Image 1: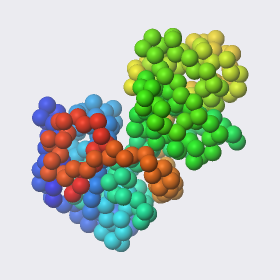
Image 2: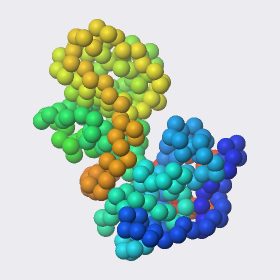
Image 3: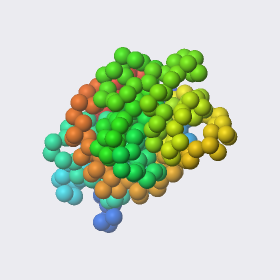
Image 4: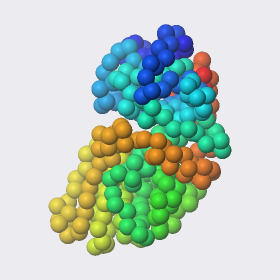
Length: 313
């Protein structure tokens, strides 16, 4: 079968032919004939050997964490992920064996490439809001990094989870204006010049940036209501300075959200089905998904395209 494999970190991912895995002999494992896989930021890090998960230290390795394909035992189209699969199991291959709990049927109204390209960036905010915070009626949300792929999806997810108001913050004022937000905060190059205004009243912050922004936000916010800060990414820096007086002067909870803060088994069929239900409702998001054949993978991988890249087998 065709697969993308990394044998040398310096050489990068290569298209190759490897043996097909054996058909599972037990009901706890499913074999999927893969149709579409997404080239997510996480997958690029895997293939470069820079992702902290242990699988990234093993060579040779097949990158990839999820995809869409056909369950060969039922003939149904399914979404799957590899988080609970044995170490070394990557989705960039024509066939893959994954735990049955890591598979969910895809509704007829969803395009396979869109599901393959967007479920992973959706997962960050979905699992943060489902597992890392208790949401109160009328809760409000600020998304730091709102114009990123994950940030744009987070806005729709927050609304579908009952957020009364959704605020967004990013550097690009033009791209912010395109999003369905109740208020927009333009992040300044001189961070101290950024004003959060009404967004300073948020109950939950979905933070894809980190770096200087927790300190600035806490320093400028005048709110006294409880705040849950969910660190999901660190596009602006891996370390943050948190002022102690601000932690003592307000009920602030700072938590991380990612694979490790919730177990792989937690991403089950219930969560996957819920995500795909929201994906059907936010039809306008994800229009930048670009589909390529797996035979073009090496060239496209090197090109570092801005679009959401999906490969098909």
